[in-house]
Every structure is written in C-alpha cells, then in structure tokens.
Image (cartoon, rainbow, N blue to C red):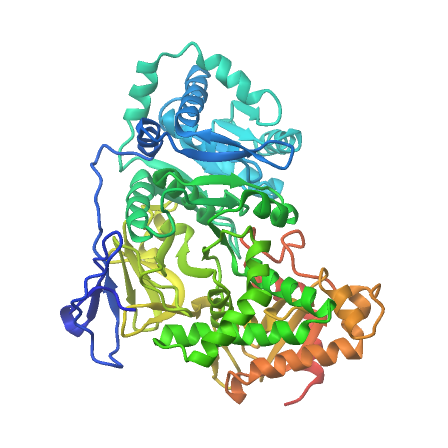
Length: 639
C-alpha cells in the first residue's frame, strides 16, 4: 500500500510522488527508511487542462458522447426514478443560462443559490456558469443575519431559492440590510425557472456561447462561505481551475469508483464544498446522481435507487452501524451481531496486513451470509465504496465497513481546498488515515505539526479579505489549521485541530478529538465535547442520542418514555456513560483522561447553534452556553 514512486526531497525531506495511472501502480518503489520522519509529499498531476477550459466543458463533453450517459435521476413521485441524460441536462442548463442573460445579468455577476439537496440545485449551478456568472451557495438553514452577510458581502445581484420561505428570508434580509445590488429572486418550487426558460428564448446560441466561452481556468467559479465554528463566515474564492483540474485528476485516481455505470445518491447539503465537488466530479465522470433532501427517507431511497457508491460524513456511518446493532439486539441476536462485527474488523485488519488466516476467512464467510449481506441490502445492495469526509471516521468503523464489503475511502480537505486534499483510493488505501494527496496536490508538516498544503485544490484567497493572505499562506503553502503526520508510505493522518488542542493547567497538551470520536461512536451518545483548557484536569460534556434512547432504555428495563432530562439524571444511564468514558480513557495517558463528566439534558444541534451545517461542533459556543455546568465541575470536584 505505497504511493508509486518516492525520492528524497531537498533539505533531507522525504517526498513521495504518486504516479498511479488509471488502474495500475508502478511497482518500482524507493521506500524511505522505516521510521523516517516524513515531512512532505508532493504528487504530480496525472493530467493538465488547456487554459481556456471551464467546468461547463464537462457537460458539453458528456452531451457530445455517443453514449449520452444518464447524469441524473429524478424522483418520479411513485417510488421510482426518471433518468436525465446529458443532452437533456445540457439543453436545460443552457436555456436557464439564456434566461439569466435576458434578465440583464452580466459576466461575473454573483448569484445566490439557496435550496435543499435536489436536482435543480445542480442544474441552476451549471446554468449560472453557462451564463458566465459566479454562484454563491447559501445553506437553506442559514439565519437571516448569515443570509444577509453572504448576499451582501458577495454583492449578489440575484438569488435562486427553493420555495416561499426562502424567498421571504431573502427579501427580509434585503429590506433590513439594504442589499442594494440584489435585483431578482426566482423560486424553484414556483414558476421562477419556467420564467427564466421563457425569457431565455430571446437569447441566441452565439450569445450564450460567447458568454460561456469567456470563462477560463483562472475565472472565478464560486464563492463558498465557510460554515464557521466561530465568527462571521469567510468567502473562499474557488476558480474553474480548482474544479476542473481537481475533478480530472480525481477521475483518473478513482477509476474503480467512477467506472462506467457508477451511480450515487446525494443527501449531503450541496452548499457544502464536499457535496458540491462530488457533483461536479460526477458530471465530469458521467456518473448517475440521484438526490434526496431528507435523511429520514434515505434508507428507502437507497433501496429503490441502489447506488454503487455513497458519500457521507462519519456520523452517518455511525448511525448505520448503531441501527444495525440495535435491530439485532432487539431481535435477540445481539451476540451474533457483536461476534460478526469483531470478525469483520479482524478480517479487515488481517487483509490490510497482507494475510487472512484460514479460520478467520471461514468465519468471515459464515457471517457474510448471516449478517453482512443484510447491512449491504439495507444500503441498496450495490454499494461497494463510500467516500467519507468532514470529520475523522475512526479506525474501527473503517475496518468494520471494509470487513462487511463496503470500503470507506476516507479523505481530508477544507472549503479552502475545494474539498479533497487527500483521499484513500481502492488502489492506495490505509484504513485509519485520510490517504495520500490526490494527483496535483502536496502536503507538508510544519515544525509545530500543522498540516500545510498547496496544489490544484487550493483557493485563490478569501473574498474581500486581503488582510488574511499573510496568515493564510506561507511561501504558497496554505495553513489548514489541522495537526497531523505523514507516515513512511506518504499517507496523512489527522490528529486534531490546532486551535482546539487543550493545554491543562499542568501544561499537558490534549487532543480532544481522540476521546470525543470514541465516546460519540457509542449508540447511547449523540455528541461529546472534551474540555479542560487551563483547568486542572480534563472533563467532558455529553449529550444523549434521542432516536436511540427509547430502545436503549427498554433493553435496560427502564421506561421508553423517559425524557432526555430524566435520562440525563438517571443513575443507570450515568453508569453506562461512565463506562463508555472509562473505555475511551484506556487509549490515553492518565493526564489526558477524562476525570469528570456531565450529561447535558438537550442535544447539540445546528438549530441550537452548537453545530455547523457540516456537523462540526462549535466548541466556543458550547463552552459559553454551558459555562455554569463547567464551573460546577471545576468548582466542586477536586483532583
């Protein structure tokens, strides 16, 4: 499991070069000395695009293909799906683009896009590009102040929104904040898109092509505002080069995932860079994409659509594992499930090490018939790969899914890097890491452990924030704010967030995510925030999983109707959480271990202001809102 070619870089830096072509790896390897301190890995691009290229070329390429592939599938309202082929998609995106031109939008104008995850989101996104404009995604859950800030800071002249509620929010923001540039608002659910199509009939093909062709790799494609765990969102300026060059290289690096006939179902918010990039990559690769706006309908949609791969954040995989376990326990088959899970993990670890003992292989085959195939069927029956990003997955969970026949390709990236800096691929995978850099990208580990990156993925800068350039970049390297390490094979492992490292009163450095990820993985727990900066010891705030709680209570002979508040104070529940924390503490030193905890009676959610739309904890907000609980911990407990 090595990147293909390695050589020693300047200044005694080990530099790994991955020249993995579409399917095969070069077997000639110059492996660094075992245990070498790898500080940098640079992976050359597999392909470069002509300067005049832009992201709309992907649509035209697919439409010109004799295969005319199905690019999207739309719900037919009867539990099935209606295909949208490349020619149809290109024609509709072009017509909507003509409508934007007819309505007076000029090249380079910003257009806000605010809707749930649905086919029209991507259709409008490409239409904005066909018109030579710049799209500005807005989470449909954004507060009025966030909406006003994003539309105002980007100087958006128009917005396409999902329904009346979103249009009202935009108009209110315009009224309260004086968004003088905003001239148009069109609804997807109303007649807004049809009005654009009708207006577009007056614009000729030559005018559209002139506008579309004015875009180059260097042109601004989008301004994506970071969801932000603190402060006002910053607008990341991503170019067509970011999307085109990264998509083209990712397409060649992931041929097994993006093979002809591949399909996926999109349920992550398209305003997030992870889902947005995958959408563009799918068009570039001819992948069939379905959409579902409600995670609650994900399982039936998975079963009716049967995708070949999915993308999700770790919390989704935790939910799949936990729901499978609870279903087994409720059916009296808990022991079988746990034995099967342990076998899946052991089999995956053995396979990664290079040899699966025969007894383990036989046991794995038996459990595949008894347990594993049922989980795969629940995911649609065809899923071979899953792409995970947004937060650390956890090594055991990665091995579990690999062991049941669904290989999770964990990756790493930021809004500032158009999503993936690095990713595990079927040909180059090491579970527990976030993979080697994608072709065209590079990673360096700074002296303080911070992960730096540069390459085709990196944004050109923050919108209207030249003051941040110096602190964001050093000699062309982007500071990610994350702490990590490169192993001898050039695989990156993220160990924590630089600003979130806790330094106790005794001077001990503690990475909170090492404990949080383990605790949150338990079915009883929803969220965990480890605290202790400047304090004499480490403590934690824990919330309970409201969906899983009733079943858990029944299995422990407690009333299923017990409220979250009552459960937080129940001694049986407290004892169970104490056991979960004790198990996690075994992975760290005594100085890093959690000495005290409190169960919070309400969950941390996006609605409560404690999670970002991409499910990251707003740590500072949690500490502020629960300061009284923390003072109770540190005021009454002596260690």
